[in-house]
Length: 146
Image 1 (cartoon, rainbow, N blue to C red):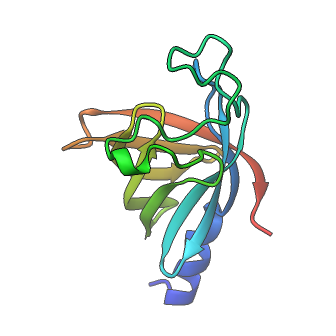
Image 2: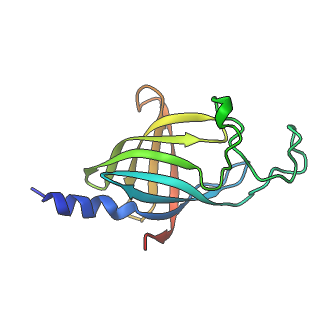
């Protein structure tokens, strides 16, 4: 049986900066950090930090904000620095569960689990309800935690 200290060390294997997969709105770097016994993550870099010239909401050239958030009071938050990952707990075998991931492009929060793959990539399984009805995405490491 692993000691609590070794479990904590294993649970830190995903700390650092990760690159999301490119989508139509670009991609980002997310820094995963420890917050007590849980892991959290924030956007630290965005490939397309400003709204495009053809922005339908009239925000062309302005820094991207959380405008798709379901809470109108949160829609003016800058995406850069926004915490999008919270509550992940290490459960062993390079897996973290009980987390949530917020997708600012869709304005939705998903329950999520993640697994550190043997090739060093980080696989996310986001879902609403049960994990069978969800989608996967894989991030690549940009840099480990300092």
